[in-house]
Length: 422
Image 1 (cartoon, helix red, strand yellow):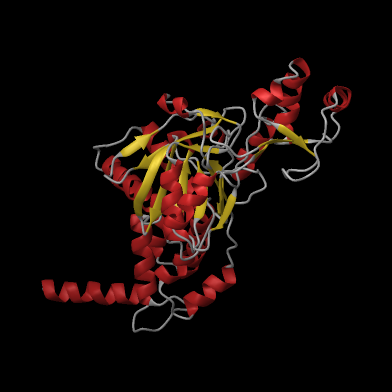
Image 2 (cartoon, rainbow, N blue to C red):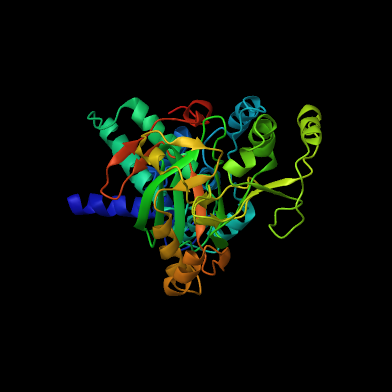
């Protein structure tokens, strides 16, 4: 009798899933249904995002049309996250001012419903359909695994994380979904701003890490991702006009020796070989009062005392932000290290230089070492792809599996919210 009942159940399940290797009217094959139901039951990629009622209806009815609808929604949630972006960007815009700078780039992927459904009807594996939208960062897998384990623990009545920790964990999963989507990503540099730490990650392994200094609370390091293109050894510092206007010129007007004491020169352009320009206090005062264009450029030539130190790493972006050496080594003793104008200062820049030169350029450390010692400016092209992402993760799962949480120094935990109720 038991064997008969088992056979009846097996036939019923096969019929419900589509059976006989043929697609149903919606285009679903039996193995596709089975695979997607398993993903939904586990919420393997943490992307149901409030569609629990729809999932329950699918589990109850097996309706293929509802399943197609859920597949499209799941892909959108996976590709573009479940943070209420409109709400966030509205609050972000409202808090901007001349004295407060904050930028958070959201990378949205295009989701083509027709393409997904055509792949489904062509018999593609569900994993293959979802694959292009899964964040390529190991942080996504680690955070998601912990979150799913915590959800299961709650359902069993034995929670392993507080409700607050669960929310923070989930918010950071959604942030990783919004990071720059890159296919075949094998190497990247992750600057985790709330942690004040940078990691170089190769093949999902941390190969280098060090403390960093990031932007002040009012001059925040922007959140974005770009590929590193160049390393500059013995750089000159081109003082941005914004710093010249707010800091250099006011101090120079009060102290004629300010330039000499701070090793600054004035040129027509940001080139040491361009024409020298004498400082005109009258013109400078007019620039401040009328907010007109500054007609001269302040430069700090390369030296062992240059404020950028001996090396900077360029990943061109509209924020003019980069990683660099620093003279303010004493600040690395502080726990909260938000002191820069937005750039990322490295505690061990030579380790970063040596690693990237040997792994991501067509030169070697042996070739660069004498140039480094010469104090002459030299540019090195980064020829092997290396994405740099300044991230904002207030929850991070470390290599040993430990969940670490960090202070919300820029306030993003407060102004970013999920677009569904947990």
